[in-house]
Each structure stands twice: as C-alpha cells, then as structure tokens.
Amino acid sequence: MLNKLRNFCIIAHIDHGKSTLADRLLEYTGLMTPQNNVAQIMDNMSLERERGITIKAKTARLKYKADNGEEYILNLIDTPGHVDFSYEVARSLDASEGCLLIVDASQGVEAQTLVNAQLAMEYNIAIIPVINKIDLPQSNVERTEQDILESLEILEKPLHVSAKEGKGIHELLEAIVKQIPAPQGDPDKPLKALIFDSFYDPYRGVVIYLKIVDGVMKPNQKIVLESSGMAYEVQEIGYLQLSMIKSNELTPGEVGYCVANIKDIHLVKIGDTIMEKDAPVEPIKSKFKSAKPFVFCGFYPITLSDLPVLQAALEKLHLTDWSFYYQPENSSALGMGFRCGFLGLLHMDIVKQRLEREFGLDVLVTSPNVIYRVIKKNNEAVEIDNPAKYPNLSDIISVEEPYVAITVVVPSEFVSVVMELIKDRRGEYQDMKYINAQRVIIKCVMPLAEMVVNFYDKLKSVSKGYASFDYEQIGYKPGQLVKLEILVNREVIDGLAYVVHRESSYHKARKLITKLKEIIPRQMFEIALQIQVNNKIIARENIPAMRKDVISKCYGGDITRKRKLLEKQKEGKKRLRQFGRVEVPVEAFLAAMRLEEE
Image (cartoon, rainbow, N blue to C red; front, side, top):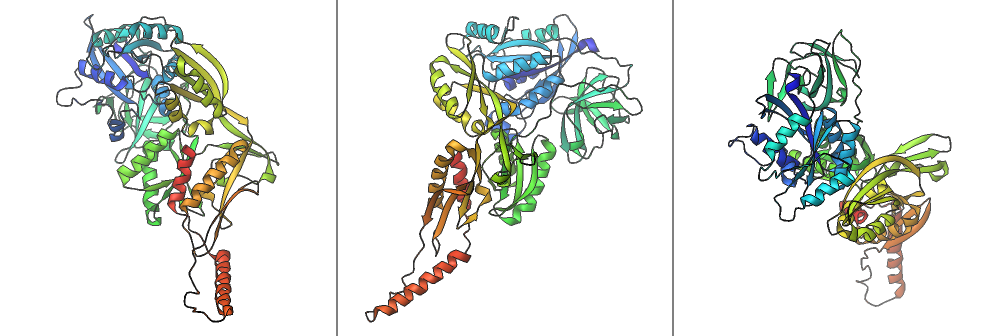
C-alpha cells in the first residue's frame, strides 16, 4: 500500500491557477462528475468563490491508474496563495512528500513563488515545477523556464500545462507518480500520527486532519495528544474526497480525518503527535511554526444590545479559525468590545465580512495596529497591542517595533518609484537581483506598522499593477515612537489613539484634527479639539458653539438689559463646557481609519 501512495500539495503565487489545476486533476481522475462540475469546487466558502481566492487549504483523495498499469492513491492538498495565509502552505508541506510549484506563463516568477519554493526546500520535499496558462496569448514559456532556473535554482525541466483547457494533465499525473517519493512508515509499530489541520463541527466536536506516520488507526482506539497528554477514544475515521468518507482503518502514509469527541479545539495543536494510549512514542519533529497574530484592531458593536451576539459570533469563528484571536476590552469612547488579532489585513477583512454575512452583524472596526515592545524603567518588557495601553513617557526607557523582511518582484522600469515608496515607508534597502532584463527582485526590511496599512495598494499603484511582494517577520528593532492622544473637550478619546514615528507625528496630527473638526457636530458650547504627544499639545482646533439669539426680543431701550442677557448666556456656555460631554460619532472613527489608509 505504501508504494502506491503519493502525498503532495499545490503551491504558487496568488492567481497562478492552483484551484483550477486541482479541478482538472479531480476531473481527470473521475472525482469531479458532470453532476458536481463547479469551477473551483474545492473552494466551498462563499467568500472564496466571490473573491476568487483560496482561504483554507483543502484535501482530496484521488485514484489514478498509471501508464504502467498500477493504480495509485494520490492525496492532494490545494493551498492558498495570499501571503496572509502562508501558514496554510507550511502545514500542508508538513503532510506531503512532494509539491507542484505552479508558475504563470504570462506573469513569470513572483514574490510568493520565491518564498514557497524556499519553504519547500526547507521541508526537503520533491518539487515539480509546472508552467501553467500556456494557452494565453501573452504567455512566454521560454522566459518563464529561464526565470525558474535562474531565480529558483530548480534544475528539473518544468512541465507545461493549461489548467483551463486540460492540456498536459496526463503528463503531470505521471510525473507525480514517478518523481514524488512514496511515504515511509511501518504498520507494525505503535501508532504515530501528525496533525496538520482541524476544524470544529457543532455536532461532533473537533475534526482532526492527520497523516499516519507509523502504526494503524482504527475506531474505538484509545489515543493521546502528545502536547496536552489528554486521552480520547476514536469514534470515526476516514479519508477526504469532496466530502468525508468513513473507513475502517488508516494505515501508514495515508491522509485522513479523525473524530474523537474532543470539545475544545484549542487542545488540538498543528504539528502535534497523536499516539496510542499506553504505547508512547517519540514525538514527530515538525518544522511547522504556530501562526501568531501580529495585526490588531478593535471590534465594537454599533448598538450595545448586539454585544452578546458579537461575542457568540467571535467564539464560533475562533473555533473554525484558530489563527484568529480575540479578548474583551472596554473603551471609554466606544464602550464594550473586543480586541482582535489577525495574520494580516486580508485576514481581518475576511473575519469582518463573515461577521456581516453569517451573523448579520454591523461592527465598528478601529484602525489596525501592531504589537510594540516597551522596556520600562524597572527593566520590565511589556507588549502593547492597543495604543490606549501605552505607558507614560516617564516610565519608558525604550520602545521597539516589529520589522519584516520584504521581497518585491517588479519590472525593471518601475525600480526607482518602488525604491522611493520603500524609502517613504522607512524601509532599508538590502539587496537587488535581476531575474532577467525585464524583472528585478528587491529585498529590504521595513517596520511592520508601515507595511500593514496600505503598502500593497500603493505598491500596485506605482507599478501599474505589475509588482508583487511577500514578507516575513524578522524580530524587533528600537524606534523613535510616540503616542498621539486625541482630546475632545479636554477628555482623552482612547479609541482614536495612535502610535506613530516621531518625525511624522505633527503631519499626521494636523491631518487628523482637520478631519475631526469637519465630522464632530457643533454643540451649544465651544469644543476644543487637541492632539498631544508626551503631554505636549502639538495641534489644536476649536469647533464654535451654536448660538441662540437671546436679545432678539429686546426692542431698543437701555443697553444694560442686552448686556445682562448676553452675560447670562456666556456663563451658561461656560458651565456647559465644564460639565458637558461630547459624544464622538462613529463617523469620526471611520474617518480616522480612512485617513490612516491614505
């Protein structure tokens, strides 16, 4: 059985045709029939279909009869291409012996292609380069082959396919059988299985996706999760096609699922080892690193009555997406809400849209921010994921901000404008390499806070849509960072706090306060808008009071009567300014977020 198994995943830059190629493989092996023939059939979330992207990695078991007359079982994993979901690629590689590296014949090697190829090499698995979209009029197969050889240093001759038209699929399946090694394992050894994914089913609890390394898994078997030491009884096992198919056993090398009445998905860790109870084994050394959120923002209900609904919705989303993090928080301006952590802005947008579509919730989202590391005078290092929690200046020795290493692939004609954009975002140039005469790889490091807000859109804009980029976190570096605090009628609005670089603090303060003056409605008293840095006011605007004409009924007569009425009105406005509260409208927070994006 082991010799007839092949476990592989499809990896590529976004929109290079992974899901369409998966469709053709399913169609060729008979898993996709005229009755279920739907484009991107493995992308079963409505958001995936609408946006044309893969968000979650999907697994399917195919049967293929090769030219040598033997029948093989192919376990295919279709992975996302967007950088925000690169952790899905990593855990898919962990369960595979090989991968198909797809490159668009019209676009060539892109940033995510480079990163995925390097990741596959780290996992030491077989790589089959595949040039897709050869049917397009603008395709350039020869140039793409040269790109793969020079930039990826892959010596194997790439296969040429058209996933849309089904060309080259037979040759591709033959290459999978011949070039990807069979998995290793011993059915007579104690059970050892690798967890590479999981999701929560409200009726059956946690469903684990796993790969059997050694031994055999059967129903009613007692198993233990190595990381937690918790013991469970296997209720159901099987393999994955377009749905879950029950099986009586899973043997070494097979990829499948397991239901064991696990109620808490947080007990199931990716890369963990499953073993048989009373038969401990050496844990599997997985290269997979847990996904850690590094972009944070606040989610607040528009009306307070929606708070319990929002909490229940976030809990359900957290059960199906363990990379998403949340905890309750209270804002003096926005009331009760939740501080949420994401892997990137696309991840944040996906969660927000799922809240709107699946739960009918309209939420207010504060500006995204990153985690800063503050070294206090007592030598305590604290991580700040909310600007409102930023310590007082007198307590701080230094502040560190997260940095990322960025790889940009861009046509050579746009190198100068891209370098200018990187410089504007406080980026530091590292290296430049020409793939060929037309395309360049630029490497730099940049503060994550500068990259996370609108960098991708700006990059696409200055390169007329031709640039692509990828990034990875590289740690923290000291920075000249300050906290912008917005005061409305001398009251600090914590929901509008920002952590910015000292050099740009005045510029951002002026833009923000001008915008707030337009949005915050006038009251019966004058409102002072102020922005302070380190307890020093750096920008101020006044919103004039609405004035009632109290002397309209005075017709002539002694002027002292009019003066008395005006003085009385003045005293009343003074009392209002002292004790009155200004309700900052939701539009102010939205405007502040849009200003940050601009």
